[in-house]
Amino acid sequence: MEVCYEDVIDTKRIVGLHYLREAGAEIKDEDLAYAMLSGLPETYDALTMTLASLENEKFNSVEVRKALTMEYDRRMSKCEDEQQKNEIAAYQTKKDKPNASGKSTKSGKCFSCGRQEYFAK
View 1 (cartoon, one colour):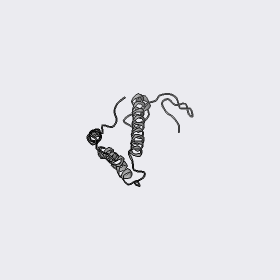
View 2 (cartoon, rainbow, N blue to C red; view 1 turned 90 degrees about the horizontal axis):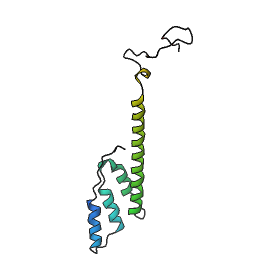
View 3 (cartoon, helix red, strand yellow; view 1 turned 135 degrees about the vertical axis):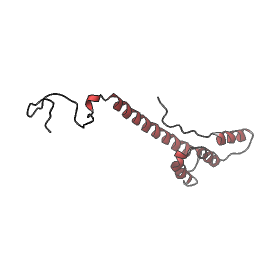
View 4 (tube, rainbow, N blue to C red; view 1 turned 180 degrees about the vertical axis):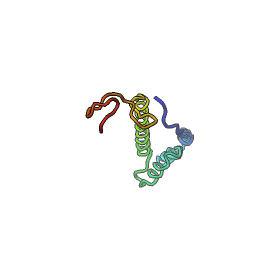
Protein backbone atom coordinates (compact mmCIF):
# COMPACT_ATOMS: atom_id res chain seq x y z
CA MET A 1 0.00 0.00 0.00
CA GLU A 2 1.28 3.42 -0.91
CA VAL A 3 1.69 6.05 1.75
CA CYS A 4 -0.74 8.90 1.10
CA TYR A 5 0.41 11.30 3.71
CA GLU A 6 4.05 11.98 4.24
CA ASP A 7 3.45 13.96 7.39
CA VAL A 8 6.23 13.42 9.86
CA ILE A 9 5.39 13.54 13.53
CA ASP A 10 8.13 15.00 15.70
CA THR A 11 8.36 12.74 18.75
CA LYS A 12 11.36 14.46 20.37
CA ARG A 13 9.24 16.20 23.02
CA ILE A 14 7.45 13.00 23.98
CA VAL A 15 10.75 11.11 24.20
CA GLY A 16 12.19 13.95 26.28
CA LEU A 17 9.28 13.69 28.72
CA HIS A 18 9.82 9.94 28.90
CA TYR A 19 13.46 10.47 29.86
CA LEU A 20 12.44 13.04 32.48
CA ARG A 21 9.93 10.60 33.93
CA GLU A 22 12.61 7.87 34.06
CA ALA A 23 14.90 10.30 35.86
CA GLY A 24 12.27 10.71 38.56
CA ALA A 25 10.60 13.95 37.47
CA GLU A 26 6.86 14.18 37.85
CA ILE A 27 5.23 14.70 34.45
CA LYS A 28 1.64 15.89 34.39
CA ASP A 29 -0.74 14.15 32.01
CA GLU A 30 -1.62 17.57 30.58
CA ASP A 31 2.05 18.13 29.69
CA LEU A 32 2.14 14.82 27.86
CA ALA A 33 -1.01 15.76 25.95
CA TYR A 34 0.51 19.11 24.91
CA ALA A 35 3.73 17.33 23.88
CA MET A 36 1.69 14.98 21.67
CA LEU A 37 0.03 17.94 19.97
CA SER A 38 3.18 20.01 19.60
CA GLY A 39 4.88 17.35 17.48
CA LEU A 40 2.17 17.23 14.84
CA PRO A 41 2.67 18.60 11.31
CA GLU A 42 0.78 21.67 10.07
CA THR A 43 -1.89 19.54 8.39
CA TYR A 44 -3.17 18.72 11.89
CA ASP A 45 -3.51 22.38 12.96
CA ALA A 46 -7.33 22.38 12.98
CA LEU A 47 -7.43 19.27 15.16
CA THR A 48 -4.70 20.66 17.41
CA MET A 49 -6.66 23.87 17.99
CA THR A 50 -9.84 21.93 18.72
CA LEU A 51 -8.14 19.65 21.24
CA ALA A 52 -6.22 22.47 22.91
CA SER A 53 -9.48 24.32 23.52
CA LEU A 54 -11.10 21.44 25.42
CA GLU A 55 -12.09 21.93 29.04
CA ASN A 56 -9.32 21.11 31.53
CA GLU A 57 -10.93 17.91 32.78
CA LYS A 58 -11.36 16.62 29.20
CA PHE A 59 -7.88 17.60 28.01
CA ASN A 60 -5.64 14.63 28.76
CA SER A 61 -3.31 12.26 26.93
CA VAL A 62 -5.99 9.57 26.59
CA GLU A 63 -8.44 11.92 24.85
CA VAL A 64 -5.69 13.35 22.64
CA ARG A 65 -4.57 9.84 21.67
CA LYS A 66 -8.17 8.84 20.82
CA ALA A 67 -8.66 11.94 18.67
CA LEU A 68 -5.34 11.46 16.88
CA THR A 69 -6.10 7.80 16.20
CA MET A 70 -9.54 8.67 14.79
CA GLU A 71 -8.05 11.41 12.60
CA TYR A 72 -5.34 9.08 11.32
CA ASP A 73 -7.93 6.39 10.49
CA ARG A 74 -10.08 8.97 8.70
CA ARG A 75 -7.15 10.15 6.61
CA MET A 76 -6.10 6.62 5.72
CA SER A 77 -9.67 5.73 4.74
CA LYS A 78 -9.82 8.81 2.52
CA CYS A 79 -6.47 7.85 1.04
CA GLU A 80 -7.69 4.31 0.26
CA ASP A 81 -10.86 5.71 -1.38
CA GLU A 82 -8.75 7.98 -3.61
CA GLN A 83 -6.49 5.06 -4.55
CA GLN A 84 -9.50 2.93 -5.47
CA LYS A 85 -10.86 5.72 -7.68
CA ASN A 86 -7.48 6.01 -9.39
CA GLU A 87 -7.35 2.25 -9.96
CA ILE A 88 -10.84 2.24 -11.49
CA ALA A 89 -9.91 5.14 -13.76
CA ALA A 90 -6.73 3.34 -14.82
CA TYR A 91 -8.72 0.30 -15.94
CA GLN A 92 -11.12 2.22 -18.13
CA THR A 93 -10.53 1.36 -21.75
CA LYS A 94 -10.11 3.91 -24.47
CA LYS A 95 -13.28 2.79 -26.24
CA ASP A 96 -15.32 3.84 -23.22
CA LYS A 97 -14.06 7.41 -23.48
CA PRO A 98 -15.02 9.95 -26.14
CA ASN A 99 -12.44 10.70 -28.81
CA ALA A 100 -10.98 14.15 -29.52
CA SER A 101 -14.08 15.24 -31.45
CA GLY A 102 -16.26 14.43 -28.46
CA LYS A 103 -18.06 11.57 -30.24
CA SER A 104 -18.21 8.12 -28.73
CA THR A 105 -15.89 5.53 -30.25
CA LYS A 106 -18.46 2.75 -29.74
CA SER A 107 -19.68 1.04 -32.87
CA GLY A 108 -22.93 -0.74 -33.62
CA LYS A 109 -26.40 -0.05 -34.90
CA CYS A 110 -28.85 2.46 -33.54
CA PHE A 111 -31.72 0.72 -31.78
CA SER A 112 -34.15 3.34 -33.04
CA CYS A 113 -33.36 3.75 -36.76
CA GLY A 114 -30.84 0.94 -37.46
CA ARG A 115 -28.06 3.19 -38.85
CA GLN A 116 -24.46 2.10 -38.29
CA GLU A 117 -22.40 3.89 -35.57
CA TYR A 118 -25.27 6.12 -34.54
CA PHE A 119 -27.22 6.01 -31.32
CA ALA A 120 -30.47 7.85 -30.72
CA LYS A 121 -30.79 9.59 -27.39
